[in-house]
Amino acid sequence: MLHDIQLVTVLDYLAHGREGDESPQYRKPQLLQVIKEEGFVLCELVLKQGPLGTIGDPLNVNEYPEYIEFIREIGYEDLSVGAKTELEHIIREIIQNDSQKFVDFFNNSNPISIRLHQLNLLPGIGGKIRDRILNSRKYSSFESFEDLEEKIEGLYNPQEIILNRILDELKNPDIKYHIFVNTK
Image (tube, rainbow, N blue to C red; front, side, top):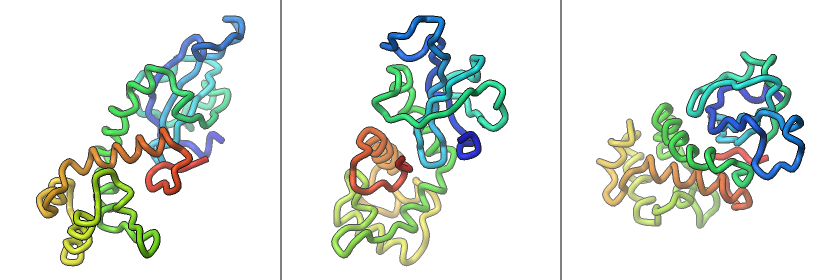
């Protein structure tokens, strides 16, 4: 599984294993809870030795095979309190660092069915704003989040809209349509 995951960001380091783990202290592994930047996949790295990075650090796991025993995907409910606290901040940074990818979602989103468009899956985007986005992008692509806000009346803080959708997909893996988070 190491080859499936490359760039991650550290959410939390659990030097004494998960809270609530009933195992004897000497048997509890050191854990690193991370989010894979591509597809926003939550994972737990079981460490042979540690620590490996600090909270907020980007980390290429393929560079540290001697530190990592194995990697497992986890759900939002498996995150530590600290990891849940950091999650929003780190996703916001990922969106800012790769903003063009998310602006391009507004440029390239498609209908899901006759009655539903991908844009409608974003919180706060109803029919009127969706139609304004679709009409505007016929004439020119959006260059940035600022450009998007400037051109689309009634659309405020599109980065936060994306962030809220990603958090919703992470917290509710059973929702029907995932547009940003890769599911298991």
